[in-house]
Length: 382
Picture 1: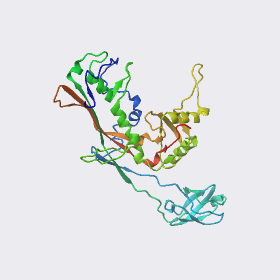
Picture 2: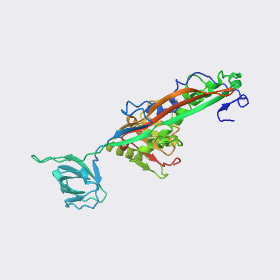
Picture 3: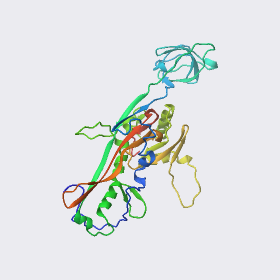
Picture 4: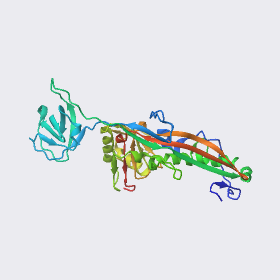
């Protein structure tokens, strides 16, 4: 028997359900990312080649403000070797530790500097120490200097088709059941969004949940006549700021280090996404700094927003999130696109049955990936 076919022989257990027409009226409790990031972001990302099964967008990044030393420094050396000299120019004031240095020339990855600039104290520094571009102090009457520039990059993704059908025999459709007035509508509602049986809450069904899963598991595939197209998800595009804990426990420092990295790269993350264990870990990190109101009947704690030196960030629990992952996202830089909205399609019948299919086609966009990041392989027990 074909998967999805419903007959009176298989539907023998009475089920009490409150059945309503909820295809277009869903509470997205179970698919929170779809509600948070939206499915109609064509305007937000200003796509000019939309609609198309392959779509592209442009991204740019801020110029780096720091790099690292590639040598040990004593407190008098004036030729400073760095990993990337292109981000500096004559007239820059750079900082290593608490010492300021004035850059008088840049040749390749070597900076010619004046040590102990502006009354700071020249000091030794180790290979690998960070050197920051702090400010600019051009000499009066000096000629112009060109600085570091970035190149706009393009990226792309594909749309992905989501579809599933329900096939019901003529007898099954009219067979009387306790609490189910329309067998076809009942099983269609489970695909798109189903009642919990207790009133007006209708949670997202199978298909929206599978669409949401592309955020976590989406892998980009072009597709062909024999291979389905598929959209890339968050991890496909966000590759710069990735912290691998290698099964070690998540710490507060790891979260705030990732936030700092994203912030210094020009990002402005506003949402952390985690599953149950890491949500509990985050609550434990900040229990000592929770703002509370007195209650004689309630106990415990739950952190919904973290306040850091780099701003506030919402903590979002999603039961479908991989348990070892923590995603740090700017909601303005991610979202789904609707190529074909959800629709119910009547499929041809050649026998004593009816077939209806729910079908939709969507894409996904991630811009400014350097301003977001994620932590992977965190312990789910420690």
